Image 1 (spheres, rainbow, N blue to C red):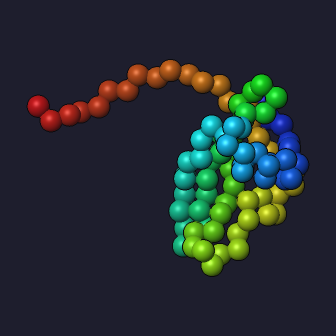
Image 2 (image 1 turned 60 degrees about the horizontal axis):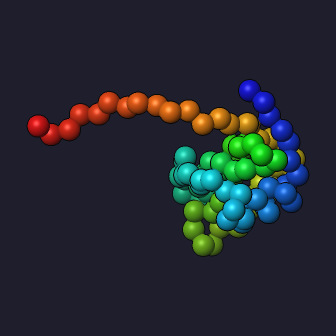
Image 3 (image 1 turned 180 degrees about the vertical axis):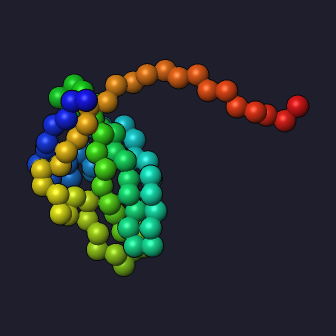
Length: 88
């Protein structure tokens, strides 16, 4: 598993860039903070990083507030087949 460390300033630029972000997925929700998985493009590869944001408008939880540099894991796309049950 390849990882890179990017400065918080670059990660915040990525977070607010529409052309670099592939997806943002909520992975955990608490009373005060929400944990989000971020998939993004950087130097021709795709990486994953996690960040927290405030769960309400009154929370002052900023992405990567206490993390610099930010650890990012290189990702690869795979195709998966899923079986599910449906009504007959």
